[in-house]
Image (cartoon, rainbow, N blue to C red):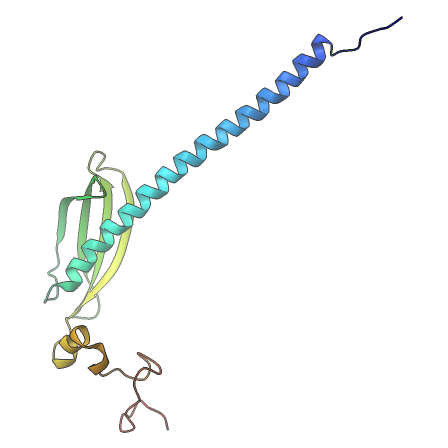
Length: 159
């Protein structure tokens, strides 16, 4: 007699359970990766917002006053709220800047905190010459090794 062989109902059910478990694990992982990428995007953009605030303070021509500032900005088609605190340091002409960045829709949840320092602006001929003609600016040997010959009369240069 010819007997046909095939899967029993129990074997098919076990195979379906195994496939369902594997697919659910795969879907869970995909959802987590998508959520993480959104979180990383938010944190990166919040970092840029904080760095922009610090850079604006650095580009001003004065040492910032001790204060706390809160403002809203748009960056990357998103509204952000930042709080910048200018804090005194032990050095009179140096300020510590702490910037907390949050989404404007949820101002109580800080996404990123950025820290920077702002010092007294550099004045004199070399400060402006560096931006207009970098080759003519005078660098010390530790600032730009090999780009400019060290000054032999400089006491910081070892023979």
